[in-house]
Image 1 (spheres, rainbow, N blue to C red):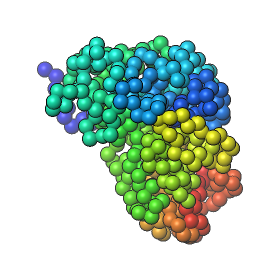
Image 2: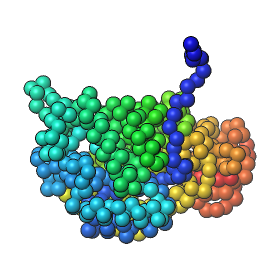
Image 3: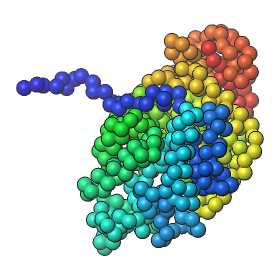
Image 4: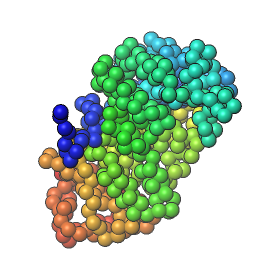
Length: 436
C-alpha cells in the first residue's frame, strides 16, 4: 500500500497559466456602448487603437440574446441570457463575432467572453426543455438569486448533473468553434467550485485558456481560475481617496494578498468596471483627486490592471445599463497615462503577473499612515514606487537600504540616486515610480 506524506506541501496552484498572460493587461468592452453602432463590426475597427494602448486581453461583456420576460429597461441586461449558443442580434451575427476574434488574434490580442453560469433569463429555452435544471423557492416556483434585485433572471440548480454537462459543453463550443481564449465568469462563487475545476480541464484540453472569476475566493485559483477580482483593493483605495481610511488599510489588503493567496495567481485591479460605473459612480466620482495615483498603483503593484471602456477617453458619465448610451470618444490625458503604464508593465519583468513577476516588499517610510512605498525586484529589474495617499504635500524619508541605488524616473526619464540621505517631496496625492 502506498502512503502519501502528510507533511509534504501540496502545490496550491495546480493549473498552468497561458504563456501570453505573463505581462498581460485587460480591457472590458461593453459592446452596447463601445461604439455609435453598438456592434461587433464597429468594435473591430477599434482593435488597432487598443493594441497601441497596450491591451493584451479583451473581455467582451455577454454576447448572447437577452431575455424579454421581466426585462429591465428597453434592451434588458446582458446578464439575462436567453440562448447560450446564440448571438445577440443587437450586436451582429455569429460570423461578425468570429471575425472580431480573428482580427484580435491577428494583432496578437486575446478575447475572453463574459459567461453567466449561475442563472438564465425567464424565457431561456432551457426553461421549457429542462425545467428540472432550475432552483425553486419555498413555493416550488422558479426563483431569482436570493436577496438580490435581479427579477429578470432565475437560478440554475447545480445539484443537477444535466445543467453541469450542458453548461460545460456550451463553454467548450465557443472556444472550439468561435476561437475565444477563455472566460470572465459572472458571480463565479455562486456556482460550485468543482464545476469550474472540471470546466477548466475540458477547456484546456481544446487549447490553453485564461479564466477570470468575478469573486475573491482563494480556492478558485487551485484548478479553475487564473485571476480573481480584487474588490477589496478597489474598496480600500476608494475609502482612502474619500478620507475614510488611511494607508494602513492598504497594508491589510497587501498582507492578505501575500499570506492568504498563493504567489502564482493573478488579482484583477481596477478603478472602474461596468458595475462600478453604472451603480456606484465613475472613477472620477469614486477617486476624485486621487484618481491618477490609484491608476498608477493598479498597474505597478501586484495584480493585473483593467481598463473599462471609456476610461482612456476620460468618460465622466455613468453609462446606462439597459439602454443604448454610446461613449463620447476623445483624446484625454488618462489615455496617455494608461499607454505609458502598460508599456512599463510589458517591458519590466518585475511587474509581470503571477510567478513571472516579483512580490512587493514594504519600504518603511517616515509617514506610514499617508505614504505607501515598496520595491518589486528580480534578477533583471527593480522598481521603487512611492505614493502620497493624502490630501496634503509631504516630504518622504525612508529607513533601511533596500531602495538604495541608481534608477530612472519612469515619468521623466531622469536619473535618480537614492542613499540614506535622500528624501522625496510629493504633492497631495502625488506619486513617483523609479525603474532600474
